[in-house]
Structures are given as structure tokens and as C-alpha cells.
Image (cartoon, rainbow, N blue to C red; front, top):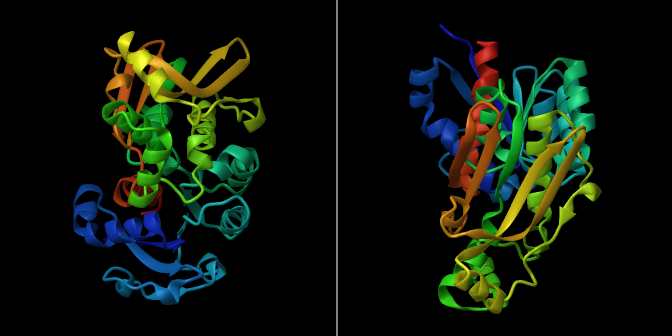
Length: 324
């Protein structure tokens, strides 16, 4: 009989809830496919007393203090899902130092302090995994790390922010201005109350930095990335692109020239017949070009509770497979 792998989830927001739901509701399917018995041993959230649902009720330890999970000797893996670059850094660092493997979806933290965190994980001989930080449910990091490990990566290009893609898609289809679609996106939960992280391109920058690290083993400084958002894109530009047989998308790109890595995030008019032109709404699409495999295109839900939770759980199961 395989041992129970116990995980502690820090942060019970959209993705935290989806992760707990997935691990509990799909436990039988997970065990059938992997032979792993993964149990949610605890959830920490500052507002845990205000949260309640069918899945949270099945978690034995519910606390406002992440340290309770980190210090618990029975917990093997800590899942950091609070976001931000302050407390999250401390939680991940403490977990690694306390002998825990860590899974995170925190793209901003990785882009800004990935060098420190990966060095700490390496020195402590524990895993720090982050599939859910890029592309939501699309397993793009796994493809780069594993399936394309024998390739020199020549280029990565893609749409990695669903909010911007949703706005640009509707602007083109409905001939409505940026401000109107943004307001709708906020009402639907596709955009934050402060949408600048998305529409100014920062979110895409963080994701492209992570992709560049996995492709080339080097963290690029945020300030060295060329960044232009979509706030200045108007209907006239969208129509002009359409007339020219093109479609405007916010495109992130990574390319290596010699020892230098170049990352850019900016609006780009792509040909209507290209694979990226067909990525609509909140979906993401990422093209990877390898020297042996050629062009590979991955598309799927770039955000959302369960799609992102799927990627979080993929990392959990990879780690759990080494512990059984």
C-alpha cells in the first residue's frame, strides 16, 4: 500500500478552492491513474472563518496561520496560492527550510525573485514547482522541461494573458471601444478592479520571463523586457489591421541571440491565417520552436479556478510520485 502524501494549501481564493476541490473530488481517478493517495491535510487563509463549502468541510485542519501547515511534520508539500511578492516569498522560503516541497502559481514572485528561490530550493534539496504560473491549464512548462529537453529552443511566442485577449477579441467583433469592453471584463471577473497588471502587459512580462528561464536557464530582469500594453489600441487600428488581413493581439516573445536573451511584450498585428490569430476570448496560445521538433503550438484555458488548479495538481502529483 502506498503512503498517503499530505499537502497543505496556503490561500483559499479562486485557485486554492479549485485545487482542494480537484484533489478531493478526483481522488479516485488520481489514484487509479497514478497509484498515489494524495490528501489535503490543511488549508490556511487569513479569512478562513468566512469561507465554507463542501470540500473545505472535509479538510481536517483549517487555520488562519500558514506556519501551522509549514511546521506540521505530517505535511509533505506546501501549496502557495496567496499571490504577491511579500508574504508569499516568506511562506515559500520557510517551507523549503522546514523540509517541504513547494508548488506555487505565483508568476510575479518567480519573475522578480526566482533566482533566490530556485537557489534555496536547490540548496535544501527540495522541489519548487510552478506549472500553473504560465498558461493556466496548458502544460507548457512541462513540455519545455521534459518533452523538449533534447531541443535547442529557437523561439517562444504567444498570447499569455486572457484578459487582454478577451478585450481585443470583443473590440474586433463588436466594434466597441476599449473602455466599454474593459468594464464588462471587470463585471465578469476577467479583469481586476485595478486592471493595469493585465492591460499594461506586466502579467505577460512575468510569464515570458518564466518561459525564458525554462528555455535557457537564465532569469531575465523585469526592467530589461520591452513592454507595451493594449490601452492605446483603438478601433481604427483594429479595423486597419483587419483590412490588411491581420488581427491585433498582445504577443509575448522570447528569443536567444548568442548569449543574450530578448523578451518583448507588445501588441502585434498577426496574419489572419496564423495559429495565434485564431486564439480568441480568454484563451491562451503559445508557439514553441525547437531545433529538432520544429514548431509546436499549445492552446487552452489560460486562467480560471479549475483550469489553473489542474496545473497545480499536476505539480503535486509529480512531487508525490517521488515520495511514495
